[in-house]
Image (cartoon, rainbow, N blue to C red; front, side):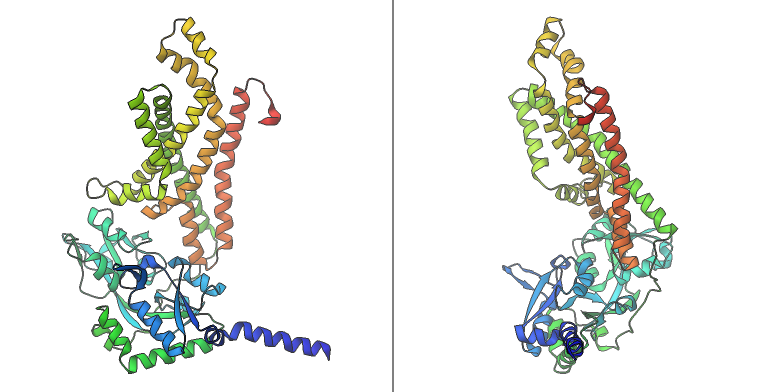
Amino acid sequence: MRSALLLLALVACGGDEHGGTLAKIKKRGELTWGADLQGGEPYLYEDPSNPTQIIGFEVDIANALAHRLGVKARMVQYTWSNLVPSLERGDFDVILNGLEATAERGERILMSEPYFIYAETLAVRVDSPYRTLADLRGKRVGTLNQTFAHDLLRAQPLEVVLYEGNEEPYIDLEQGRIDAVLLDNIIADRYGCIARRPRVKCLPDDIARGTYVIGIRKADPELKRAIDDALAAMKKDGELERILTKAKLWDKRQTEPAPKTVSAATKYRTFDTEMVWQFVWAALVTLKLSLLAFLLAVPVGLILAVARVYGGPIVSGAARVYIEVFRGTPVLLQLFVLYYGLAPYYSLGPVQAAVLGLGLNYGAYEAEVYRGALLAIPRGQTEAAKALGMAPSQTLRHVLLPQALRLALPPMTNDFVSLLKDSSLVSVITVIELTKRMTIAAVDMRGWLVPGLACAALYLALSFPLSELARRLERRLARDQRPQAL
């Protein structure tokens, strides 16, 4: 009898945990919806006149839905690419952020009735001969990751270039770094085909159509019904039309039947041989970027260190300014400035910008390592060189720098391993290195564990041999030959 009562209690608790989200929402008086502010206007963005307030057509929809449920709405900030797994984790109640209805998403979460019908718009340069996706065979086409446009492009014989923001692909299109951009018409109209981009044009034909929906956990069918009822009421009394009209989004598409839930015929991938080779190739890209950047950082660091220790007030001050600027600002910001900020004046390729950005940044760190090593050399070494009649430049070259590099070898090794990991940041300028390949694989496989372990294993495979080589070199150069410390 006691076992039966315990079983009933567990069932009751489980039902409340998995099936009572709507009741919990009403009890706490709040509907939490996950979104990403980086999506920008017109989805959701900070009010220019009052940055403490978030506005946008999806903010209005969320507030209207919450009002009809008898509660208030609260936006929860999450990276767009992580919205679905975060919803599954229970971090918020629903997703409301340009979530496209696809068959693949329908396998993971519940999707509401659509609240907006969008079209995939192809943008090209004004002097471009391309008119369809078929014309772009073998070309570079930009889009956002984890979108229906990405699925469409993967089915074509072309190179897909992935971005994290709405504006960046159109900047690259202007600069000739890519040949076309495929994105939702909302994004194309707001960020691509605008007055300040006279070299970009949007083709008039819809490549495909889809719908925006609200994402709900599989365990919350009663919440889906309530949201569908609220959306139906908003459509019936015209509130949804008023919201879209206010955002200048109401068009003929909204009066036509919604397209069926679409699928681009993509399949769940497994960690097969092809994916292994993709990971290996991405690891080689990471290693190449890191080596080239460090080969730039070492001479830059040496020059800065010598300037700080032996230069006059002006030279030493200029070196210090460089070090503080590059060490005191995020490398991610420096990459954005090099790749996008300088684009109107000089267009760097993604690999060039990555090597230059990482190399100049780590040059500042290396400068302080070498400066400390130079200052650690006893003054007697310099005095002995003078006694032998060596010029200051000869003393620096033949006496001080060799000893300083020996002292700096351990921190240099540490810096290179850090650089190897920081190279993951270059994915923001479209370079597909090891970490970016891992995130793409995680989406394709609908799981993070296996790609994450593979990524970690490859990083270790890259860093450990270098650490061992540096340790052996330290042992050979060490005067006291203390292997237990090396």
